[in-house]
Amino acid sequence: MRPQFVLFGDSITQQSFGSGGWGAALADNYSRKADVILRGYGGYNTRWALFLLHHLFPLVFDCLFVDIRDSPCQGPLYAIESDIKPPVAATIFFGANDAALSGRTSERQHVPVEEYKENLRRIVHHMKECSPTMLVVLITPPPVDEEGRKEYARSLYGEKAMELPERTNEMTGVYAKQCVELAKELGLPFIDLWSKMQETEGWQKQFLSDGLHLTEEGNAVVHKEVVGVFNEAWLCASEMPNDFPHHSEIDGKNPEMAFEQQCL
Amino acid sequence: MRPQFVLFGDSITQQSFGSGGWGAALADNYSRKADVILRGYGGYNTRWALFLLHHLFPLVFDCLFVDIRDSPCQGPLYAIESDIKPPVAATIFFGANDAALSGRTSERQHVPVEEYKENLRRIVHHMKECSPTMLVVLITPPPVDEEGRKEYARSLYGEKAMELPERTNEMTGVYAKQCVELAKELGLPFIDLWSKMQETEGWQKQFLSDGLHLTEEGNAVVHKEVVGVFNEAWLCASEMPNDFPHHSEIDGKNPEMAFEQQCL
Image 1 (cartoon, rainbow over the protein chains, first blue to last red):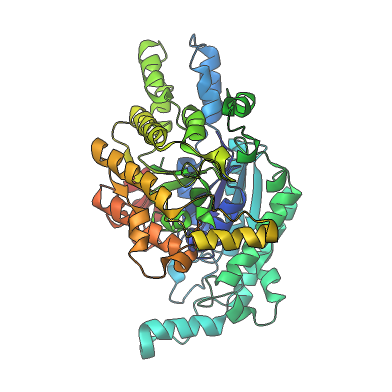
Image 2 (image 1 turned 90 degrees about the horizontal axis):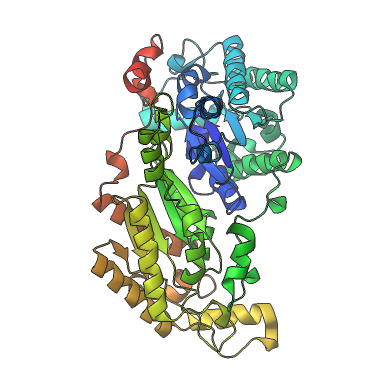
């Protein structure tokens, strides 16, 4: 069974298999090496994400191991151990909704910044409980283009659109900072997307389609950063083996030779 | 655990998560509903694909069930039953390499057409043994643009490029026909990509990047056809439930209510 990378986050993760998406590009990089599993939940904040944790990442692995050891079923059931595996890597990419302002149109999604940080900590803790060796990568929310958000609201609601923005770049930056601080506290790799994107002049329209979600170029930034983190860890695609022989290694007259070595 | 769709095939499947790829687009359609798992093997023919079958699609499901039933471990081990599941759908997309001509540069990949059909039959049989209810979709190889193949060879090898094509559209059509015949014999849904693409004038450059592999528009054709087959079966994305509540169903003040119904 191939290693799994799980992408856990909000709409920016959910949309990551759309055209030019960072998730699809990652799956392409790791084709024949790892499965990239999409667990993106549009509109979700970290508070709601906590409800999903035990469903998405059950802690059954150790239990099974113990059960099997203690049980008289030593035979074929042993296979189960190697068949159910926690992911080897996960990206945790929340905050864009937590940072929605209290008292504005998206208030329902707002989570206070202290709670955001604690929720992220609980998510990381759970992942590490699933597997202490899991590569957990924290990604901050991207910056917010307030003008882009306004234009988007006007395109949907016309004159009725609220004049006050439901998210500000400044407030999202506060959340991004807490995400980075937590990663440093826990010694985790992180991607400070909020800062990274703002290094490029014209980031507002180049990287964001509606002031919040990513354009293809914005997706390319996330993709490049994630690949960078994976490369620095032990998950560089070019160093990982293909799951089966490359076709050029297969002898047309004796194909079984190539497969005997790798899979029989 | 979400239902899985497996894409099993050669390079045209392996590349399906590239930019504008049909696999990524499918994963996007089914986000929060099903996982699209990539099992594409560039350069592979059906003969070589047979070596992978038991590794990629193990027949352990029934065994485990029996083992558990017959063993004294009735307790927590029961969870295993629902944790390991065969895919609910699979696309089988081979033939572009089988149809490489004998006596030409890609001879090593050639598989006689009768054997191609029998190999496909064995693949389908195996999938149905994994799960009799699996939706197995046969896809024929796309047409071949011989001029495009020549140009591609010249771009790689210059004057040294072989003048004789390693694949012809006519011969690939013979394989496509056998694929369709098998699908009809077995009562399986199929996509006659070879015929479908040739209905469009200019298919050679519009759908094929090098006379064989797909452009973004070619990918869009495959995507549309696969979605059509899935919709006609019981796997229409819009009729499948999200795995967890839509964010608009979550009460900001009482989030647990929405989750209690669906997952607690």
